[in-house]
Length: 154
Image (cartoon, helix red, strand yellow):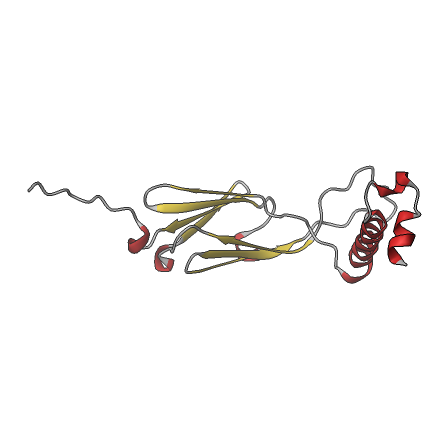
């Protein structure tokens, strides 16, 4: 009976037998995405702050753009191979009659967690802020540093 139903369909509908299921899946994803964006989530500041992570032989360096934030408004913690940076960005309110033509700067709490390629010496981590750029220097743990191995001649 099922085979009869499938073979009675027009040939043009046989391009993708799962087309209707895929269409329903796309609609469900759109529906659940719009619901969670509109009803269940708080507004976020996106990926903030922007960061660069580099390394040399001895340390990792994290540089984050944090314009307008004071050092005492940030929380930095390091455990093993993970750096956590969090805080809250406040933007002064505009005049209540102001009409936005573009609104890209958001206020709110933020948190960034960066996984580093190896362990760091948490006792020697240093952080400094200048001109809106936070620089965190994370010395590598001794076990993670590359070592030069001497070759013995026989």
